[in-house]
Image 1: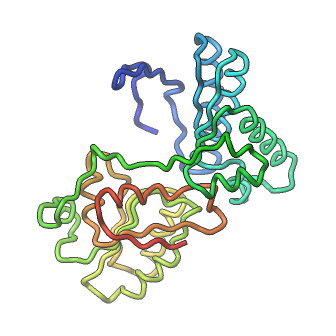
Image 2 (image 1 turned 90 degrees about the vertical axis):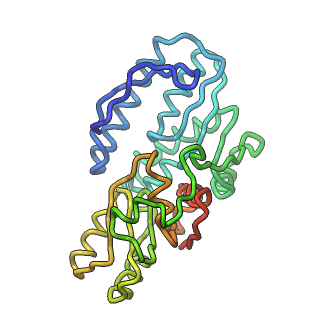
Length: 283
C-alpha cells in the first residue's frame, strides 16, 4: 500500500498509464473488496476517455475487471482477449466469501460467463483451468494454455558459500526447508507445520517462511503456541533479492488444496525450477 508508481512512464518501449494510486492494502477481506471496486471504477473512467485500440487484453485480477474491459471493447468495436490468472467468482465461492446459492453468486457467475462468451481468445495457466472452462461450455478453440514463467533475468543460482542471505539470517550450516510466496487460503500449511513440530529438537534443520497472506498469522501463532525456535519468518523479498532467498533453501515446499485446483495455479514452482533447487509438492 505504501508503494506508489509513476502515473505515466515508458517501460521497455511500452507506454504505461496507471490508475488509482491509493491502495487500502490486503490486510482483510473488506479492504481487498474495496480495492477491487475502486480499481474497476478507475479503469472504467480511464477507458471512457481513451482512444480506440485494436485489441484490449484484461487479466482476471482484480476480480471481474475483465467486465469493464469487455464492455469497453464492445463499445469501441475492439477485439477482446482475456488472460485468466485465477477463476472468479469460483474461488470466492469456494472460500465462502460469497454464499453459493445466493443472488450475488448468481449475478457474479453471469458476469463471468458474459466475459468468457465475448472473448475472442482466453488464455489459462494450466490444463485444469482449461478443463473447468470446458465443463462450463466454453468453446475449446478459444482457449490457449500458456503457463507462467520465472523472472529469468533476476534469477540465478547462488551457492550457499557465496550467499549473504544465509549468513544474514543465521542459516549457515543448516538444512533449510523453505516456503516462499503467498500464504493464501488456497495453500494449506498444516502438513508443513506438523513437520516443523516433529523436527523441533533437531538443530540441523530450520524452516523458513517468506511472504504474506491470510495464513502468515497461522505460522506465527503456531510458532508462539509451541515455543518453536526452528522457524524463521520473513516478509516478501524484493525481486532483486529473490535469487539469494530462493537459493538459500536446500528444499522448497509448494502446496495446493485440492478443491482449488483449476482455480489458481502454483506459480512459485517456476522460480524454484529456475534456481534449480529440489522441491516437494503437497497437493
